[in-house]
Each structure stands twice: as C-alpha cells, then as structure tokens.
Length: 392
Ligand SMILES: *Cc1c(COP(=O)(O)O)cnc(C)c1O
Picture 1 (cartoon, rainbow, N blue to C red):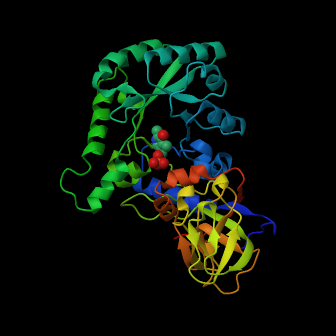
Picture 2: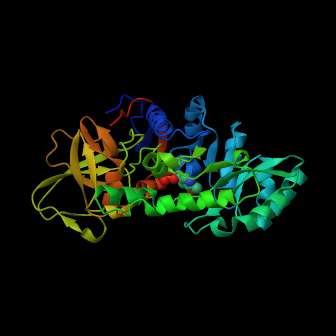
Picture 3: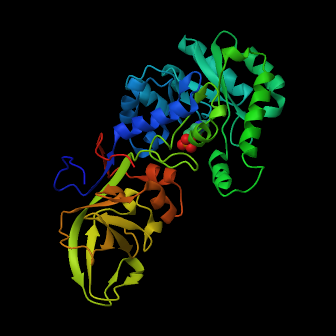
C-alpha cells in the first residue's frame, strides 16, 4: 500500500503516478525515435487522469506538442499556459473555427471547405495559423482520400494562401495493435499487412502533394504503431494509451500509472443463503464475511464486473459478489484475516505483491483499457502519487 496522505474519510480515489508516466514516454521516444518528437495525446482529460496534470509532468521532457480531440480541450490547455503546438486530431464542427483560432490551435482538416473556413477565421483573428491535413488510408472516419492527393492537394495549397500555413499531414492506423496479437499467435506471412499498407498509402499521398516533403510534418503512429512499427515513426508519433499504462500487444509492459482505490465502508458476517445486490444474483454457499466498498458504476467501475471482477484487500485477491451498484460493491473477504472498516481496497493496481493490471480489469469487463480509464468518474479524486505506484 502506498504512503499517501489520504483523508481518513475518503471513500474512493485514483492515484496517478507521474514518474511512471514519464518513464513510459521515454520508452516510446527511445523505441520509435521520430525525427521531430513525440506528440502525446491528452484528449479526454489525458484518458481520464487529468490533462493539465499530465501536461505539467511531461513538459520537462519537451514533447513536440500535445494532441487533443476537441477545440474546448485545446483552449483549456492554452489558457493553462501551454506554449507548444496543440493539434486537434478530430474534425471540428463548422463554427468552432473562431474559438480554435483565438486559442492558436492547430486543427486537422479533411475538406477544402474546412480549409477555407480556417483561413477565414485566421484572417478575422489577424494571425497566421497552422493546420494539418488528415489523410484517410482506411480508418474511414475523417480525412481526404489517399487516392486523389494530387487533386485535393492542389486545392488545399491554393486555399491556404497567406492566411494559414499547411504544416502537417497525417493518417491513423486502424489495426496496429491487433496485428501484433496475430503475429504472436503465428498467424502467417500476411501479418502487418494493413498497417504497412496504410503507411504506403500515406507515402503515396504525400508524394502526390504540391508541397515539398521537408515543409510538412508527416505522422501516423499511435502507441501500438510507435512500439510495433518503429520504422513507421516518421516525423512525430502520437502515443496515448501506453503513456497511461495500457498494454500494447507485443511491446514491453508499461509502468503502472493509474491505481483505483476504495475504502471498506462496512464488514459483515452473513449466513449461508444470504444474497447480495440487485437481482440477488449471488447467494453465499456457506457462512461468509462480506465487505462493502464505496465505489460503483457511478464512479466508472464497469457494471460488467458484477460476479466477474476482483479486488485486492490486505494484499489478497478477493472476488466481487453480485451486481455492481451505482455507489457500492460487495467483495468476499471470508479468507482474508482481520479485515476492518476503513481498510483501503484496490480495484486497479497493486497492494503489496498482489496486482490487478488495468488490462485485466478491461478484459474481465469485456472492454479495453481506454474505456476503463476514460470512464473513471468525477467523484473519484485524482491524487498525485509520483513513485508510489512503482513499476511492474
Ligand atoms: C487517440 C489517438 C491516438 C492515440 O492512440 P493510442 O492507441 O491511445 O496510442 C493517436 N492518434 C489519433 C488520431 C488519436 O485519435
């Protein structure tokens, strides 16, 4: 258990280990060594861990810039004093341009009309602003089609004019993680095909543009791309999940960044046949000791963990019994000696030698680590725990 000063009455919280975060950043940079640097993705509050906190922790490592999904996220970081480029990777709805211009953000644009709107917003703001162009090489949710780059390339370069500067081109891999899984399972020679093909499509698109290659930042790799295909790192890599402790298949384990704790609020001895939770889906086969923890789906603990999840109490693994309630869960502590009300239980992370990895929780909940982290609720205070969580 960590030596943090947590309020004795605190019910549940998330510990964020910023040293671990920095260690994961260094692994990405050393493995991929992109020519211009790392663009950490801090969208969705840095995957639920706190964007400003994460940015402050990464600043000394001098990332090239930061990636967000929305204009509001970017404007908030700018207002917090971030001086570096802030790339908005998702297309912004028409009408968001003035706010993005005011904050000096770098949008990613997917249509000629969007370039025109951005140029108009820059002119109105009286400043020359950058933009990157997204190329759709198979993700199919944004971007110009890779096949006719000579066509849209000319139109984009022409519309950019003097008002805005076209400084980057990027694409997004759809299967960089899955292919590594297949690779480990020895699925054959075609492995890596789609990622390599997407990279080749991007290369062809860039070659067809009327802008010199060395005037554009070209980027493609997310965490799985940066670690699994370092040869595709190009100018920038855009890691997210690995920074925050999510496993990337085929890559070394990341250091553990987030730990989710909840206090034992109640301990009770129950007779055989006692039931717990909505639907009474679990009944005690024998006389048992149950502990009620102050955390539930209202805090982002997936409801799918009902009768499937585990927790750590006093350094031991215990099963979650019954359905997850909004504000509470019940765990079976029959075999854990001396459990007391006020003890700290762990839902994600380590307690002594015992550990519940983030990806195990995701698997048990039939989802991905991203959804677990971004789902952690506002009710859980994020507590900075540099060094406390340790590495794996
Ligand atoms: C979220 C995102 C990333 C980061 O992906 P991870 O799998 O979390 O590393 C990279 N690029 C884009 C465009 C994204 O939206």
